[in-house]
Amino acid sequence: MRLYVSSHRSAPLADADFTFAQRASQIWTSAGWPLVAASLALAAFVTAACLPASAQVIYGAIVGTVTDASGAGMPGATVKVASLGTNEVRTVSTSAAGTYSVPNLAAGTYRLEVQQSGFKHFVRSSVEVQVDVTSRVDVSLQVGDISESIEVTSAAPILQTDNSSLGTVVPQEEVQSIPLSGRNINNLLALVPGVVAQGGTYGNAVGNQFNGSRTNAIGFGNYSIGGGFGNQSQFFVDGVATNAPANNLTTYTPSQDVVQEFRVVTNNVSAEYGNYAGGVINITSKSGGNAFHGAAYEYLRNKILNANGFFSNRVDLSRPPLVQNQFGGTLGGPIRKDKTFFFFGIERQIIRTAVLSLTTVPTAAMRAGDFSAPGLAPIYDQSQPGNPQFQCNGVLNVICPNRLDPYGDKALCERASAPE
Image (cartoon, rainbow, N blue to C red; front, side):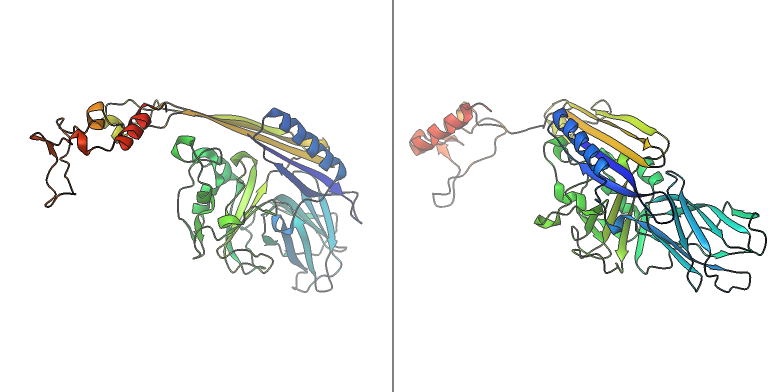
């Protein structure tokens, strides 16, 4: 069972009542519902205390230059950035050169407004901010009354021109809509140019190998990124590094329904990162907003549409049983409108299956040294010159009883009769 909890609460600013910084706390438990209740209590405490639990790498930024019609920089202009999901407002003023910067923005969509006395009010209704990406929006103001507005409702995609790193953001639409085996979002790394999968990442951490009988944790991070070897990249979830010291294992993979988006940096990674020889993967979780939103799901897999295996067909065995239920839900919304928000997600996977075994044990005749039954391969006595075929009293493929070790025979009989 997996439980994900993220809470978001406001922090004071000098020029606004409140702004909202992401506060994320993630819990993974497999010990049942009592720990779920304890996890919820912990999440409530973190929300009430407003404890910071985030890092720079989960944020984006909006920067730009405000100019007049002649292209000269405009100092002292007021720049407001408001989140469309939470109404978080950030206000800054342009510098003497007309530049501005609004850092530490959670991934999402924002409204940008620029005001200056003697110029028309500029509004860009939709500016996308992505995790670990700086978006540049340059504004040219027109002379006019400040009560007049120029609103830009559509524009060319924003390019990242303020950071030399090479990477790709996998947006929420792709995270949500692409079918994934076991709902393991690490499989989406293969969508990014410069990423090559080096092994299997089938399924999730509950059971991704041999129909759930064991887990291949190394496979989750086994990607070659930017020419590096597999398992040499650094993973972050909401700014927290999730690599283990042993083999640089990826220890935590959030559910597909709680991931907002993630960015894969494949080359020329900035100096703030370390502990990697390949790329950097930044995963950010969803957050609550002023509107309640949620989902419930169940993914069912069974043997009805499965083909039988080659070896099962060969020995006339039917398809092995398989019933896999992977289910969960999410819920997000406001605790206090425009002030405090929550997002909750839970997922569980149950697998009922059997592992096919074609192991055989010696028959009673074989334990007595008789391998003369039809279909058995010839056996040879390598202790004799020329390695002749075993025979006893003229019968080929039979080992005489006096050649059998009584202690070995006793151990073999006990082994064959022991319960599985």
